[in-house]
Image: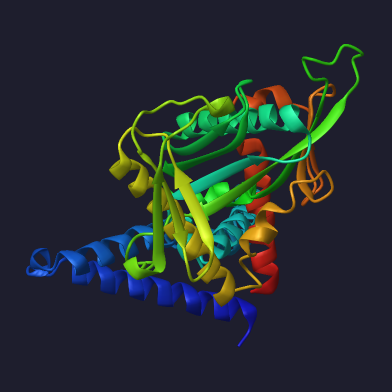
Length: 359
């Protein structure tokens, strides 16, 4: 079977599957089966774009066949018009074929999930903590533009408008599909505000992006948890609460420790800490099941030093470089204000190209 015949056969399979789903959705008793309705509706939505493109491809193929037939028409004017249209239709057909192949690539089941993001200051002391805050601000600007919602789960501030650590959740449409590329060590080169000699300093922060786990994804047994409560404290040990509202949860089998003290309510802190713990456990399980495709959490964030970086932010040159795909952009000012699509879109394209190469 030729490659072209194989692709056409796959198109037919997609269309038949889509028609079958539409028939099932039309069943009068489906409303009484909400779980099945939800599943079929999602499958229908996932396939709608590719089916629309296949329909457009078939129309283009038909018009191309007509144009080729007319190219030998006895009427020279008609034949010339057809010959002029053929290259345009051939280009349109090739573009549609490429789009469809990308749409038909296997979907990462995690792409639909919401996420938990953890940003930690690495090498560089106070400057690294300030950069961690800048990354947090940049991401939140990006989320606003996308219509996504973020919620703080835990913070450890330096008192100088910086973060030693900040953990937050993000909810929205296909959040993980775009934010997964942010995981790793981010290096910054700039002149700190406290630098009197104008020297450029280099520091780093790490970003972890975890798919948010539902209770059905991860089963946490109560007997596997050690839960400690303590009094919240602010920067420098300053007391910010007079009750034992802060919560530290230790997952005994793995040794994972999560603590949350941002809320005044112990119950709310416990709920947030469990949310983070559940997502960390899910990420560990994904790593074990597919080590080649999902790096371990330690590998994701690196060591926090200046060497294992995925991206460099050079403020004096207004330059951002993503080292994974050798992408350099001289628009760092706009990127820090949340214009991240110009960085993420090329990373998505590279991932799609790699998948097509291995398909």
